[in-house]
Amino acid sequence: MVAADDPAASRWDRVWPALPYLFILLPAVFALLRDWRPEVPALALLAGAWYWFMVMSHPGWIERPVVMIIYFIVILTVIGVLIRIDTLFTVTALVMFIQSFTLIPGWWAYAGVAATAGVLVVARPEQGRTPSQMLFSFLVALLVASAIGLVSQAIRDQNENRKVMIAQLRETGAKLAALAEENADLQAQLLTRAREAGVLAERQRMAREIHDTIAQGLTAILTQLEAADSVIDDMPAVRSPLNTVRTLARESLNEARRSVQALRPAPLDEAQLATALHETATKWSQTTGVLASVSVTGDPQPLHLEVEVTLLRVAQEALANVGKHASATRVALTLSYMEDVVALDVRDDGSGFTLEAAGSSNAGGFGLIAMRQRVTRLAGNFEIETAPGQGTGISATIPAIPADSDSRSSDHSRNAL
Image (cartoon, rainbow, N blue to C red; front, side, top):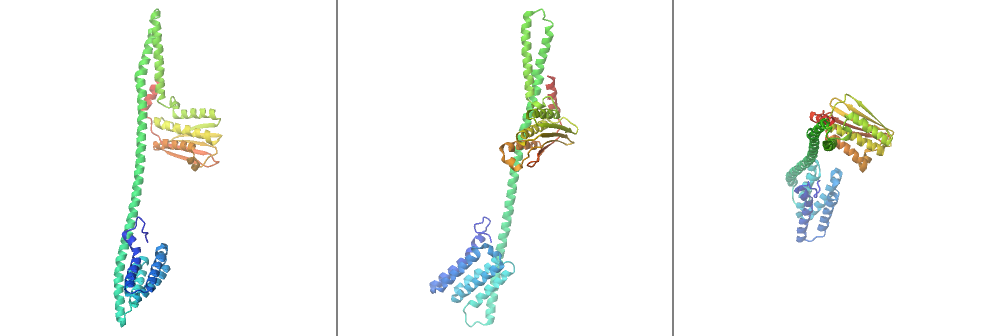
């Protein structure tokens, strides 16, 4: 039985629980108006209270056949007495036909219908009826009740189908909402990735422009000034301004070099990723006093600048976390070049932790989140293996995107300055 306040409840679900009260109250009122008898309100109140106690206040009892049998025996007995007192209460028996198909499962509902029809036929105080007349009345009541029951059953089946449809629609709506949220997240990630890629491309373009214009021009000026030195040895008045020009040109060239270098992370300025990892681990060991080793497997190859920067940042963040939280005595970094991916593993023999504790920690949790976001932004995979007292292992796997010619040409240009 669906509760009347359930959002999935139909009009029938909201109306039918009140029908027994109505079918008890109306004949009781008319019977009392016609002839006041105290047993009528007493029995009517008893029938209403019994229905409330057995059905309305204990909905779970409906699922118990024995309890429903007891309920029907008692209430049909009370209704039979009321019909014996006043035939107006025949109307009350009609609602029991509906309840037979609503409260009793399967074919047992027809047993309830037959019992109700029997009460109607036997309880009516009509004298002189022959057994055949009583049988005919019973059959007519049974047919009418069965028709009412079939209609009630059809309504209940429609309600059940409607509830299933509503549940399916809600489930579909929840899935669509989850997909919409996932699509929004993906769109946000794509926008972020596109924005960062645009920033990186613009930085590389600026480096090439500085090299190809300002730096090359300054280099040419210095070359011409060096050539002019041999010509103006005997012209002191000219040498002093030329020296000033040479100084300004060299300072400007140094500024151009610093601008180009600022467009790429410092550890990768003059090194491949493996070399940059060695330098980072060496400096970190000197600072913390913890031994950090770096090993490289596979065939090292130039990777896209963003891939190298991401792995370098993961290594730096992992080492920073080890220095702050792990109390480790040894850290091992492994850079693995494979056919389609490149992987970085950072493992320590420190105290370890639980991932739940890391998630509740603003410091450690944010560092792990930042590393994961960097890796997943490049369609990579980020995993953590740790347990209290068993150290920590961090693994970052990223597609091995090869270096493009434009990004590497800026490196060669920078080295030529």
